[in-house]
Image 1: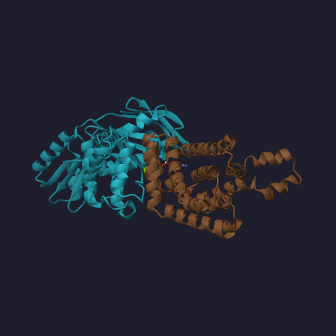
Image 2: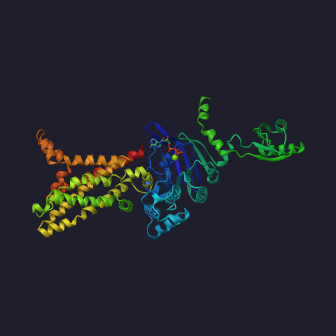
Image 3: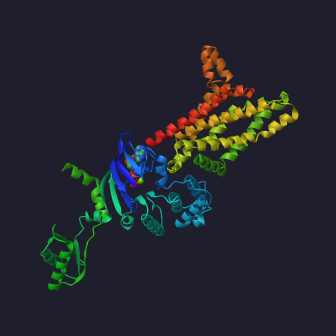
Length: 320
Length: 244
Ligand SMILES: Nc1ncnc2c1ncn2[C@@H]1O[C@H](COP(=O)(O)OP(=O)(O)OP(=O)(O)O)[C@@H](O)[C@H]1O
Ligand SMILES: [Mg+2]
């Protein structure tokens, strides 16, 4: 549904986006991650046709955004960063305007407005003017605007920004559900959101894509991924460490905490984590070291995010 | 076309939801009445025409029209709604025209509400209503030109005050280029062709000739080209701004 090729955007001497390419198909929810100023919003503005790219091509559905913007834009629903809306309009007036701009009128328009009022829990403020709404409600109003025409493509720039935890949960649910039948790109700084909602995630840093994969794949890049955390009922750190370290397939062991005694065993490159975990359990049983817990780490997205996008890390790589 | 009207409708609602439209209409009517009857001495003249009424319009519009138009695009930029508007399936041109038309309607409503002065002059004497109609048409075209200029300056900045001042300065220039005290000053040292050439750019020259009741297509064309040129420049500015 969305094909982005070699997208580049330069503001004066500053390169905001530098050679970004990816595709999103129907039924996919793509998470857009990256530190502040990485170029997420700029990329989204180019995909939605708000700003022209310096270089590169954008295809939405079968339409080229640069050559045929009107039908391409008709396919897209867009929630811009900071969720702008017209403060002097009422919520339903604003949504009615959005519906009309999308070519809906009469009954179809009324239906569309009522549908999104309900979906975004805006019914009790529908006659209130936008400027008197709280930030979260304003955000939801703009979100409602983006789905008014039930678009095939949804581009959401930080859709859960400023929402309370309940609403965050609702909106995530909504995105996930809509993702079954639409192509969705959304950006966020909340990493759990990516795990909860996305089928794929892209990490972008200083204008370039530095990682692209399922949340699971990305987590596997974590240093911790595949390590085995062992928690003992009691025992002495160095002794336990030596015993775990001598188990077949264990590369090295680090002590996480002394009390309660918790160790982390990193398996050797070619050893499967599950096998090593079983071997450790067998050893503990034989050695009469009562275990309180034992599990294989999945890896953590925030760790991956940091290791990929941290400036000094990058600098180190470059000097190598 | 439909999108243009939808945008115009929203804009109109905006003008009437905020006090802008009402303030403009009331102040315009008050000032028009004051200048016509108190300053220009409409009754004392004893003429059955509206020259006393129309002659103030270029000056009244100079400050009031940019006040209506100053928010047109600067507000949109300040609020970030321009991003919403221009990612909807419309061309920038449709949006520009829609917004412009809405502001023109506001000014025209004020102009139409001066109808009592037409009734008065018809009650008191036997005016040439064709000339009066031409005067109204000229006034409306002139207001449209000022509005288009305001649209252009409001696209340049997100600050409404800057947008207002720029519009006033450009409009003032268009008035002064054909304002007799200024042209007289010029004739003392500049060649006639130059003075006339400059005056041809002035709203004053064209407005006055329409007011006399001669609907010359050149005068109408002048106002239409000011509008078209300003709106075209608006689209160029908006495109340049988006391109970064
Ligand atoms: N109109 C503009 N003119 C000049 N520079 C710009 C413009 N818009 C964006 N930039 C620059 O481009 C870079 C990318 O900005 P962008 O808004 O895309 O970041 P982001 O990834 O969305 O960040 P955040 O997480 O803070 O929202 C920034 O360095 C920003 O300063
Ligand atoms: Mg952003």
